[in-house]
Image 1: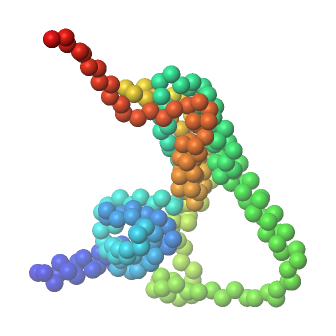
Image 2 (image 1 turned 45 degrees about the horizontal axis):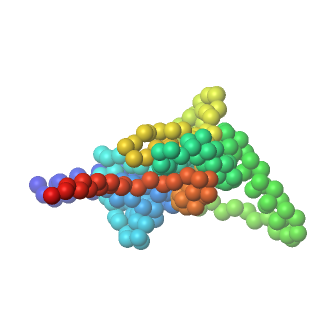
Image 3 (image 1 turned 90 degrees about the vertical axis):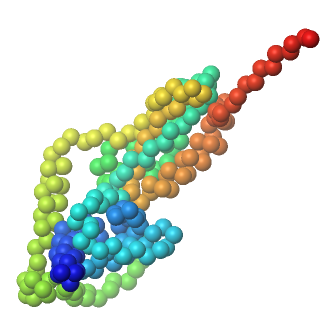
Length: 249
């Protein structure tokens, strides 16, 4: 009985491993969160997925469990939204705070100005220009015939024909559909969010490429702290007023 259950788990891990390799919900190098762990995918094996946590611990996750739980892939999308909540004191000028924060966001070229599509094109053009200038002085290399590396999956399913990956077709169809939709406005957003008991909380949102996410988040936090007081703004903190009544005996 126990061996039967063990075999069932092994077969499930194998089947899910094949599906992961075909459907590619994540790939090597992606930062994912699954089964209570988060980290960078280092290996996708047929029975398990290996990730390295931010503090460089290796976690081996059986593939079978990934079929029955959610997977958060932070690297799947090309762009992400960064969120902040900036608190200022009552009595401070909200308009000054909003203008100062917008100026900081607009001065960072990692942040999307308005449309993700325009930002993507701008960065692609910039990269192409840089590569062209770098290759101007380089000597031409002899053409080398690319050698196709046959993966394990290809050898299993068909040693002579290329395996059609289902996910590629699905993503291509999704891309066509997205191109037909109107562009979404991703301009930096700053607004008064919450009136707390001791602070005014300003909601701040901006879009950037996924690889820039944490850099933008932490650097903007530092800029808020350093530059907002220069505009006459104050960061509130919990305080308690104690009043003493003198009683004459």
